[in-house]
Image (cartoon, rainbow, N blue to C red; front, side, top):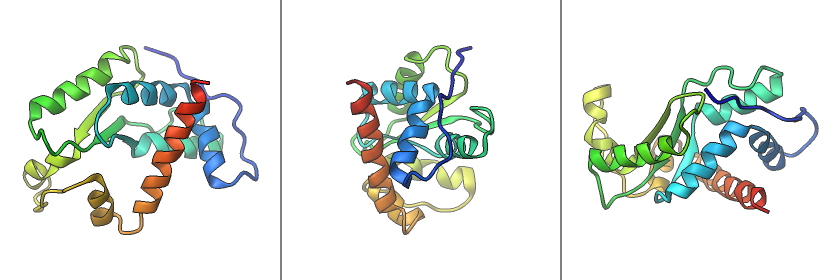
Length: 162
């Protein structure tokens, strides 16, 4: 299993965006995942959920890297191919790029959630037309945050290759 590290991120008076960037860049596992997810070239992709907020929480509270992370979630939106096979291939591409990653990786096409959501959760879920609609539907005030986070992540990756 691969060992990941967090390098020198201390809680200080940085504003939120640069501070988020410093925390994410300091986590070698997240950076590896971001590079591989970017190379997979999935439409409207994002790394989301617990692996991000838990990494920030761990950093701010001095907990060891990876504490509380159950899995790493990559979402994308491909309305042109709703097949389970395509989603599996996308997930396998990402996993293949990280053979000794320290946790499970899931990649989910948000355009196909409506096909399984009701069976799994017992609640109807209508089809989405875009990633933005997901944010608007589930988290009314998250769209600006999602867009900002996307630009922060792109900026982190751009600077990482300099």
